[in-house]
Length: 280
Image 1: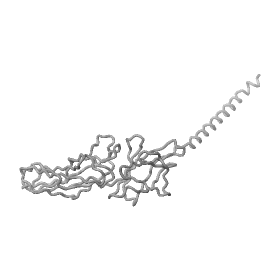
Image 2: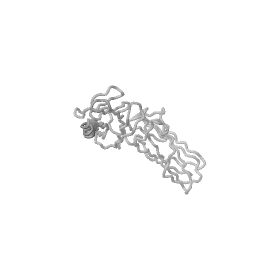
Image 3: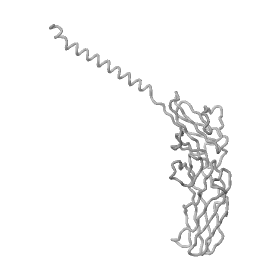
Image 4: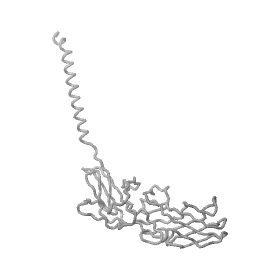
């Protein structure tokens, strides 16, 4: 009995040491397992087409089942109907679909030509190794300047100071982009205002119209120019600016309308139209 009393503390210390050692070993193994199950990255890094002479940006999407918009804008119009993209991505596999059909594997080696022209809607999907995680990217391909004026500068006929000029259909413009444009185009932004005397206001306003409120790619519309009463005779000028945004839900270009959740600034250049006239 005394023997047990004498050596019990020693056994207790040894037992505690072995127990702690075992716990430490288990914790280490657990950390190793966590490291082995590291989350795979899924991302689209770049999207190159044709001469690669285009901008590239990724914008968060608000469309159901789409994670992001991939926007590629060319400085001039291109043939959008047959493009074989070079895609750099993080993930295990990549596939694509047109107009919400089933996704099919995408391979650059087989020279997959894709028709990006309107009204086609093209999505790419990047997935991880076991297809439990994926991201869907909607591809927007267009020119930076979809509005092409027949004349970038319009001079109205000489008009009396006391009258208003109404230049309906004074000139034309064309949609040279890849998407329809919704026409709500009475712009309110004017720069480079010139008047006979300092302190006078811009007298010009302009609208873009067509037979309907939507103008499709390659269709032509009309330019209308108006003036308000000028206060004194002389030369007047200003430049009208048209801000272009993209409605991702409906797939067309709009003017402003930035209160709509689906309307995004995707990088279009402002369309500019110089207006000039002499009041007599």
